[in-house]
Every structure is written in structure tokens, then in C-alpha cells.
Image (cartoon, rainbow, N blue to C red; front, side, top):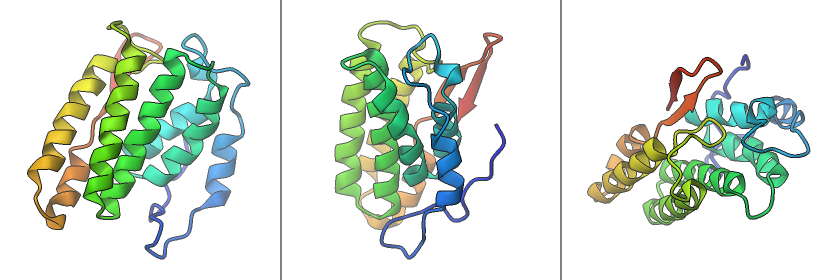
Length: 175
């Protein structure tokens, strides 16, 4: 993928402005139906992974939303996207120094990812769910261990990595 990350990422209430010229082309090429067997064709899904890895949480949420809408209702894929969106929202709340909201969103994300895994240890839409679940548990503990606002930036660095299986079967890490 080749697109530039927003600099700075948008944070509501901070005076930043979302880069809509960047976001619209990332959202547009979404297939009408996104499932485990065609996730590689969902450019917004992959773009959202890059945005999340780059700490662009508001933008990741924005480009993942059309993918979430394109997943089958009540599907594991829809649960996965809901969980990823909540992780991005939690990162955004940490950046906004709202740790209580971040904790709540991490908990929501954990529930969605647990539903997405449904006891299946295989990757879903390329995402290693077991690794993601473990990362969420560690992130929640890191947030809990930071009593004040000063430690919240450290918590952003501790966010879960999203492990993706490539076409060749290798694994790549996105943080």
C-alpha cells in the first residue's frame, strides 16, 4: 500500500482537521460484501490496518466503517471489524486523555474479538485472533497501571499489534 499517513492525525477537540482528501479514496474501493475469503480485496480494511499501526486512530475508524457495513450481519467478520473499530476508538480516547472511556472501549473490543474467534484459533480476515486477544489483555493492564494522565502516552505505545498472515503464509506485524 502506498499512501501517506495524516500528519498530524486528527484528534477531535485538539484543533486538528481530518484530511478528507486522503480518506475518501481509501474508503471508496470497498467490495459490496467483505468476508474471510475476500478480505484482501477490501482496500479500506488494509488501509485501516496501516492507519491503526501508524497511530491514526480516528482515520482508521473512518475507513473501517464501510468495511464493517459490508460484512455479513451477525458474522465473525462483523465482530472482528467492530472490535478493531473499538480498539481504534480506545486509542483515540487515550490520545484525548480520557482513560475511563478508553478502558470501556478496550473492554468492548475484547468482547467483539472473543465473539469473532468463537473458539477458532485460525486467522480471520488475515488477523491472528489469539495474538490480538493477548495484546488486548496486556493493553488493558497497561492502562490500569497508569494512575494519571501522564502515563497515557506510554499506553498508546503498548496498544495491541495486529498480526496479519500474508499471501505467502508469512506473518507481518502492524502496530
